[in-house]
Amino acid sequence: MSHEIRTPLNAIVGFSEAVKTSNTLEEAKENVDDIISASETLLGIVNGVLDISKIESGKLELVNTNYNAKELFESLPKLINHKINEKALEYYINVAPDIPNLLYGDSSNIKKIVTNLLSNAVKYTEEGYVKYTVNCVRRDNICRIIISVEDSGRGIKSEQMNVLFSRFQRLEEDKNTTIEGTGLGLAITKHLVEMMGGEIVVQSKYGEGSKFTVTLDQRIGIEEKQINSKTNVDLSNIELNIRDKRILVVDDNKLNLKVAKKNLEKYTNNIDLVDSGYECLDRLEENEVYDLILLDDMMPKMSGKETLVRIKSMNIDVPIVVLTANALSGEREKYISMGFDEYLSKPIDKRELELVLKKIFYQK
Image (cartoon, rainbow, N blue to C red; front, side):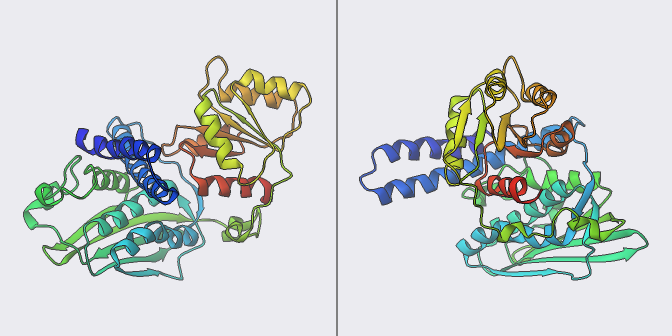
């Protein structure tokens, strides 16, 4: 773990120093691209450690909600497109057309299961293909989802099958020195599948490839039409135009405020920054009008939750999005139930930010 954490951290520090001494803008951009890549790797490692810690302490809870199954399963393979393209692999995707629109389950952890399997397939496949298939079998109000991820990679030796899902276990460590990972992905995947009452099966032939198949029973939504009851607008095709909107960002960390402002400046220049819940309330009491508030939760003296309650008591009608480093499964639902309109985890993902802004301003 020390090696896996230090490797991307070393790259982040090294390339950050290199940016300062870059001779050309092009060279600086290349260094920044490497910093971003290493940062994403480090974030993945941290998320994996937090997930396995929560699982093993018995504190991971499933959060079941209605979700758009077709949209979920069709969007997941796109998350690894860049990795597929880097290796020039063939990519076969087949999502059955008869999957119900609306299912009831923990979509956040289903996403984690599928992305772990797809990432592993690409990671251990140097040439050939990755195949992603989703089928279903309906019985009464239950839909059995069958997800398979197959690859033409190096495969798994039969004697290593019994440790495949062990935590911090990476097979053939001596051959994988150039492959990033902590050996937590499959351990987390198996835990999640079993928590949902499902099953994961592995078929593999060493030197020829592997196939992972997950089966999960999900309840079919009572009314499939409910999935689009809020809006029929496809947010992905909307161009975000909020130049006239005024946004307040509340965070006790000045670097976080700077990052938030940089991300928001793409959409509007009407951005105010404050570093406490008290100052946020002062602005509102002075009749400052905002179209959106991005509110950090973990702040000293007055937390985001406490600030939210105070704002609600003032009868001010403004959408409030929580900004939080609590990015574990179930946190979004918890914050929404508290009264926040939307949720953004730190570090802020630009795509997630844009989606949240679209939901706030176009999905009323």
